[in-house]
Image (cartoon, rainbow, N blue to C red; front, side, top):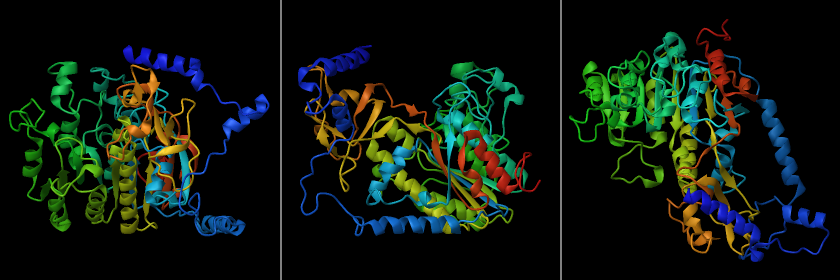
Length: 522
């Protein structure tokens, strides 16, 4: 309540404080409005030019030639109507358009492109769920993996199952299968790679049917539904479930949900199980790894199934990894997964998630989120290098966006993590990047004076800097805007236009002749 009153008082002061009134512009009221909408910002203090310019950009011919080259690329991108032997779905969790646009600066400037932005076909996906305008990562996973929309917080079940309902979800008629199962039924292999826990919301959509995304171990199920509920937790479904037990590659974090607390101090289970040991003992060729070095040493030709759990919880953010942590990058995991899966002559389906983009945004840490986006882009570039677009469909998308803004009128070459060239009406600068809401709010407002702090005294260049947020809440919220879809390979042209998120697996299935729906083979 205090935070809400604090925010309300700030809003009142912003309106009432005479020092913060809009400056006079000496024109008609309408002209003043236009001037404020599109201000001519003062030039920054720089050596040489006032802003960064690529050679030739100041000429007309530069841009005209770019237009010609783009048209030529489009004309050369003829639809590929071959059957997709392999399908790889890349999921940038929370990676909205603002995130990808801002991330380009880390590559050297606004004119740069992330690897997947060069894919020939793009579309937009509508992300709402059955019950919410703005979704979470659980119900969206059901949409883009199972082809059906459900309610927020649920995974692998249809819209008839309310979140945390311990009874309705037991009705198997509400369960919906993922494209991973469709691939297995067609003789293909399936696997998943993530930087989150392998039992987290997004990867769980590959194999689980659950009414609550937080039921990652048996203790969580018992807490909400009581003993003897008949509900198998998410880790159990990954280890023993119909789909989970057949996945050829599983890599990420979250080993705490697989082991009883009486067996290991970091374990969270209470049913006496050690599902990791169970995996290892099931076959001499089942390989379990916990470090980047062990992963690199895996001989895929001598491996039946590969399980890599590299942390008790989520993997560390890339910017927080050290040599001592011995954690593989998303690119390294992607390369090993493709090396292994490529052994199957029938092909494969692979789900690969850059999951910590989302989690960095939730805590208003924009620098971390954008660096996670760059790592995600590197993994996609590796996949493109290791596969052939003649027979492999690559699809890149996000589950949802965030309330993340990229603001002001900064000059080219400015630090995307810095301030804009003009101040607010309170005489203090504002940042290029900020959030509509989130936990950072109190860092940027003085509770005693009820005034905004100079954000440059808070954002100092640390990897875990928090960026300003406008409304105080525990975690930044997701955004409800459409998210982009990028596609390369067989039938990639299907992914153009604006469509429901639940259409994505149907298009992938069409391209690879999977499932019982409409495909290129029937």
